Amino acid sequence: MRGMWIRGFAVVGVVAAIGACDGRARPPTSPGAEAAAQGGPTVQVAQVEGDEFAVVALREASARAGAATRIAVVATPKEGWKINLEYPAKLKVVSAETFAVERNEYPLADAVLKDIHELRFEIPVTPGAAGPHPIELLLKFGLCDASRCVTRQATLGWTWEVGG
Image 1: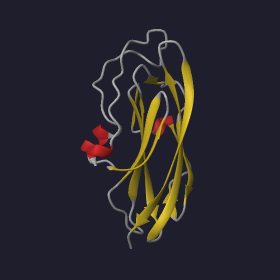
Image 2: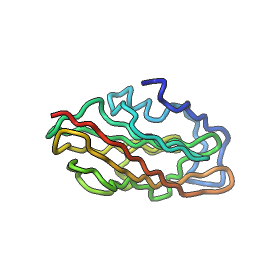
Image 3: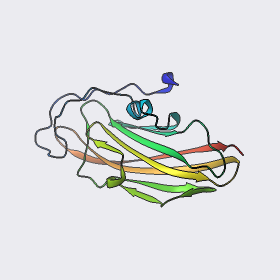
Image 4: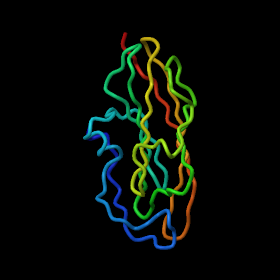
């Protein structure tokens, strides 16, 4: 599984003019590597990469009908960029056939990790039936570099094979 991770992106430089993007140093990590080491979802199921960012979706190794499980969505900025903590990021469940979800939108306040180097949402889901079931999530977030801030979105979709 480690070979599937996107390379960690070092964040270089200081962004002094943008308060939401302070220049605090932190060692670079692969998307979701820190939480995976703490027992979070670990199987990468989808990835979107842009010029300024990478976003991955992770799930737990197995799921059974009727048993709660988790999905994680992790955004990391590429070199020279930082997560804009002032932007009202949110994760939206676009579709989750047969999965019970607490709600369809998760605002920035619900992120389990939110700093300039990584934005991570983890949402609980409960599969309603065994078999292959499609899921689609949409992450909207902001990024800043030394001269500007931009907004981006990533649509992540996959089919999850749920056990009985």
